[in-house]
Length: 301
Image 1 (cartoon, rainbow, N blue to C red):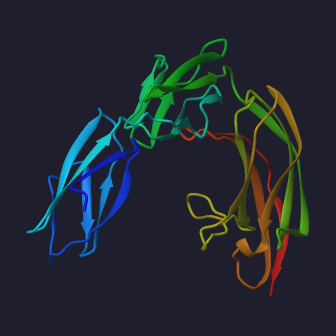
Image 2 (tube, rainbow, N blue to C red):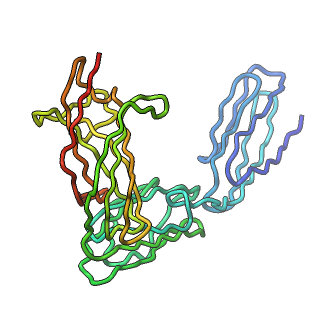
Image 3 (cartoon, rainbow, N blue to C red):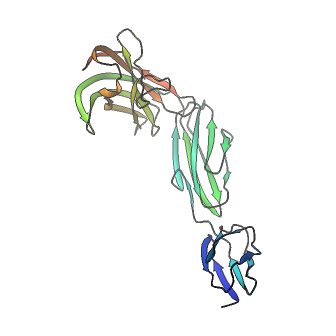
């Protein structure tokens, strides 16, 4: 049996299995550094090694029985991180309306940590952990949009973020709402709400149109399965949109509501709904415009 084994460990770490042949009943694995872990049985042992983020390192591990010993020399170079993505990209353009808001960015990296650089005064870092960070920004009272670039750095890599916040009031008008009954969407029967509206001041900013459902007496229809609902537990359905122009017209935004999600029980029910278009900031979201009520009859057996 060889009494010296040299092993070059990959910088990203590895699990290496060693078979044991001996004329003894027991053996020990000693001199393990803190970056190694051993799992052993009577005929083999595995050394589990983490990735190396600091400097080149070595270890001289001994495998001993009462009759013999073997020295295992491990060498591991420093791992160079290969991945840094913010929201799945390394270049991001973000557009926001003039209202105050908050945004969370998702971090994917194989580096030990990351840093955020060049945040402008109008953007505040609210929280940061290994998987994400959250920023907030105030309302833009300027007479023009404000644009800032900042970046995330990790292991010699950089991801760039360009944030544009528009100025001026976001406004619009719902022109018309029509209903289409007894339609099927992905083999689910329900109703389609066709919404047409104009909107200004949300170029490339995501908005949401939400339909809220009520009984004829004004009592909200409750949601019990947690699928089509508001944060308060009432029945609703929604559709996101993103304007391609500063002044945009949506002539047929479709919101689908399955009949099964209007959990009103059997019988004939007089129901109504209205639609609201929201500026969908994750912080301080606010309504832009709302429609009048539209009524319909739902019969369930």
